[in-house]
Image 1 (tube, rainbow, N blue to C red):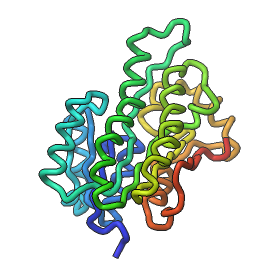
Image 2 (cartoon, helix red, strand yellow; image 1 turned 120 degrees about the vertical axis):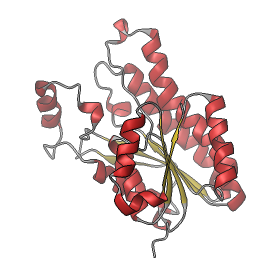
Image 3 (tube, rainbow, N blue to C red; image 1 turned 90 degrees about the vertical axis):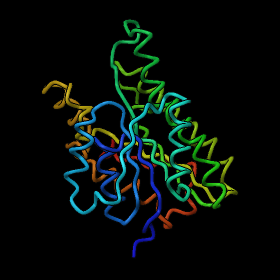
Length: 246
């Protein structure tokens, strides 16, 4: 039996890209997963329908992680329908790239609201549920972009660097309650977020990776699963980079 058997896991943005890989990993280990999403109902339903037997332990919830009232309603629903929360994966994320001098303020706000404010709100309301059982795992999906600073991604880099800093603070605040808070920083991963890259951009980016290839969602999910497991019980405030050596 897996150590995560029947544990309650929330994965934001859990129906597409890296989030979908994380959701499938936890389902495969016997966890009960609530995967959140914001817009595409059909894509979310298709994702669940394609899971076969694993779908019985998956529930989908649609809301905006960047809106306080919607996050509160989600946690009220969670408390009413499930016995607490063991693991939160803050994976929801968007990109709206542009040179900083040309970046619309609305694009700055949208990225920060989803990526950083969303992780803040989801973590804020998760902590009380985890404290009651003196166990919890919060894992933020950051990015190496928050460290190396890719051109055109001032908003994205700021949001991802902020997630790492936030985790360091929160990890110290909740450590005595049996809750760990860590980050996973993927590099270039084959997901929908890379679909808008040109062939030349993909070639340029892959040439920067020592392994000379983009990573997969499953490789990122493996790192998330490790941080959620008992094997990582003494790791907190830390970051695992899954980037092929960038």
